[in-house]
Length: 426
Ligand code: AMP
Ligand code: GLY
Image 1 (cartoon, rainbow, N blue to C red):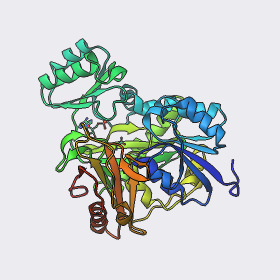
Image 2: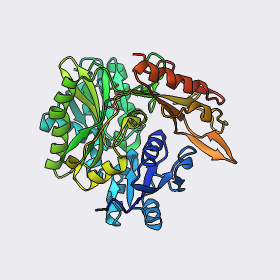
Image 3: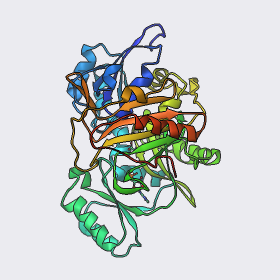
Image 4: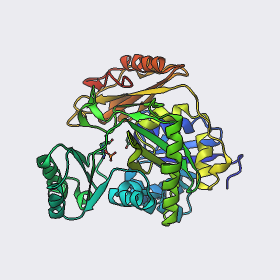
């Protein structure tokens, strides 16, 4: 274990808005000496040293960690977690924050997570799993609609289809299992009951036995205002969710969070890191829609600005399995984060447009601009992805936070810039 005097060199793996928020938070820690990020982005480069290593390059990332004498690696994206980057870091003697490969399967296999929930009585939608498209088609003949069809593996958030009738359902099964739109991720599918209710995201720190939920948040998955249009990686988020009452939080702690972490330990897949509970608050009570084995994006950009405790200290406590020894504190002030995307996202869009106005958009103490798809090119900041920026603002009340975020957005401009006008309006 590190003594407090020995300052840390941290490497954050990834390069989106979520990673910018993590790096930004760590940059405020007195425990941290230097931060690296791989591959990072244009905004992260202002506060950390970016290394040209892809987030999926496990061998390259281990070498970079050794070369730069990193004391702690934070693995955030789903793919390297599912591929076992944390295990490989540990094998090389490097401390790493994040779940092991077998624990990350709670996100990377929906068949695994649904079976876990069934076995341990964790509330979730009723379901069946299928490894053959014929069997799945047969089952659909006698189903009520709408019904939900999910590819087993990681599919960039696109592997979920809500089918309104048999025709749509058969089409989804064909695309996932026969046409292999998501590759191997579609070898198996889950067909589950359609649930109704508000959706809430709760991220939690866990060391494998203690679980400490963060403040709640809500994502906006659809591309257009009014929750219309195609699914995206997330067009904005806010924290807290007004639907998530103390009573619901207490229920979830006992029946969902603790049960999940204990179940994972029980089957020899102790989960350490951040676990994301995608909840739906149904009339029969809260149920799990999905687990993620990591911080959510853009939820992190709305949640971390509210964290008062040193993030590096929390990471250390998780790794050393002494999360019960620290107190994690949050600000009562809400945060709203509006994502600014490239016009056309999540479908076709152009990159390379110069971005203006970021300096004016950030306001001391209450607004931060997190970069997602940006890069610095010959001294100019240009767009380099679908989701480009996230403007996160806090305020004494929700309305002020919301107004400040949109004020920030309005100061930013680039060609074909697009954002939802109704974040936090529901
Ligand atoms: P997932 O990746 O499993 O969270 O699914 C993505 C989105 O699909 C969720 O955020 C929900 O909006 C929707 N969804 C997933 N499962 C269900 C379900 N059983 N009933 C209703 N909507 C669902
Ligand atoms: N915002 C949803 C996710 O991170 O998967």
